[in-house]
Length: 338
Image (cartoon, rainbow, N blue to C red; front, side):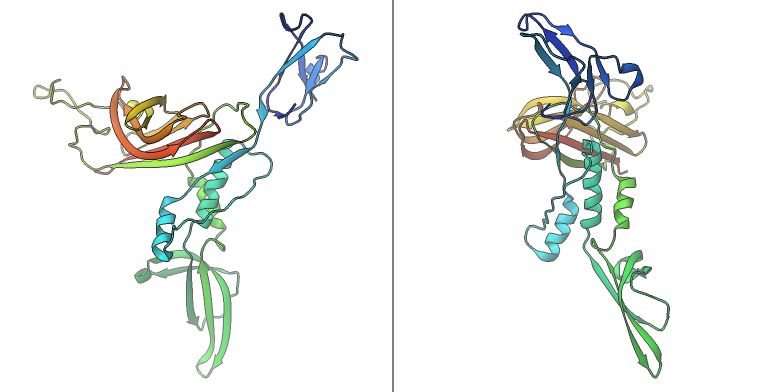
């Protein structure tokens, strides 16, 4: 098989050149109750074997299976890009490419990429100081607090120490650093707080698929806005349905659909793939657009809510030219800010 097997294949044979097909028995290598099958497969392998010593002349065989294929993940950290651009000028973008071993799933690959960003998307800082305190060594981790410099209980790694013997005593000049190259513990922290990743079924497609993750957010600051997903409304003698009574959203229906817009025209829509609701302060959603979705010049995204999925909640500009070799994961956080 051109791709390594991911799930059990189906095998069919035909003796009339594909007019009719007969299903064959298929078993997995190593499974005791499947060893009598006429065709055998092994997850991760490219070969399907058979107990046939020879096939009759004219027999046509059809294999249908889901294969494993390489995944390419592209993700960015806009805040870190802006910070570096302000410090250094230029684009603020630093690109890096890394190959992950053991064929991770899309979800695992996104988590790896997010951990790399958390580790490397850091503007490094160096702290130098003199002390009479002995016992510090290069490689030790210390906790630094300098409130006037915005440093509060910040883990910093001692990089070097110079010893000076003076009349006043033995002084140690210490240089400690915080930054992407010396802060591997940050990647572990990132994994614990990384947003959950949408999983979907693995399907056989091109030899490589690119998954691009994009993040959006909105902080709702006004309770009086015409559309507000956090509004609660209780009927009373003075509060009744009418033209000036704005929508009230059930927690489950605050964000239900994502639509993509091309040059002002709504070109398609997908239901959100995952929703995590904190009914009082936050809603996190993720929507996966697969290789067959939104293959247009996207200029904006729209989010809809409500029980009938017809209330426009938000629209944000997003310029992206997508094709069938790419998938998009659209993450969104809505926060109640009042």
